[in-house]
Image (cartoon, rainbow, N blue to C red):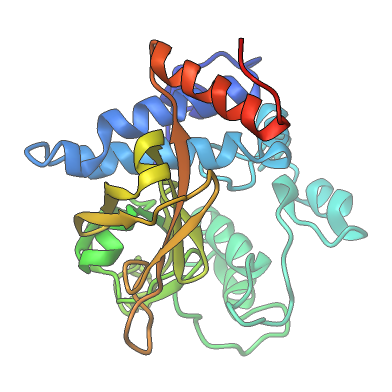
Length: 326
């Protein structure tokens, strides 16, 4: 199932600035976050769509490729310029660049993830349609591969991406994933999952109509950008406002974590930018335990300004300069 246009998802025009795109994402992420919409079964899917749209548009290269029609909203190569009636011309055009019809690049030898595009499968399907049960001798030859004699290949793996909120990573929740063929699966994401982790779901892919063999699903996990937390390896970083009085005299401030809010002691004389480390409040690690939460203090001044505070600061400034305040 193809994703919607990322501009439409974020509600911004195609000429929107990076700042406008980021602002739109933050507003939508807060509004549609699964934790804020626990009674909405589609909240996770909507939140993932918002995150995927922002991930594409916040990347200058991907955004430019999408605007030129080179990739779709899922980041997959487009089929612009491919004429199924001119296969020979398409292969000639891509021969020197190592590219197949529609700009797809293939590998003749399987790499770590197998071939991205197998031209023999393309011809087998086309010739099979032309010649009934495989298009005669030519169809049988193509199904056997260009070298001949190769047994029917296992169906290609389906590739999909699942975007998961940081809170769900911390809680070890299952997520619902919609595959390119429209099928939905509930997938358990392992503890310690990180952005880019690939899960292989055996036998959950498409079925080869000729052999009956089932392919797999190769699912790439993406961590959703969070409105407040920033991921730094196993640690999380958050900026937290603190009143001037608490920064000067010491006090407590309530800080959100992935599993609930906690009260944190602010040491006396804390300046802006001071970092407090909360042990074990970061992301879970595969080997056990968890990273830390780094709380960056930002001093918040009274609004509206406090006349007594201003007078105090005037006297303090004068004393530091060795003069008498007027």
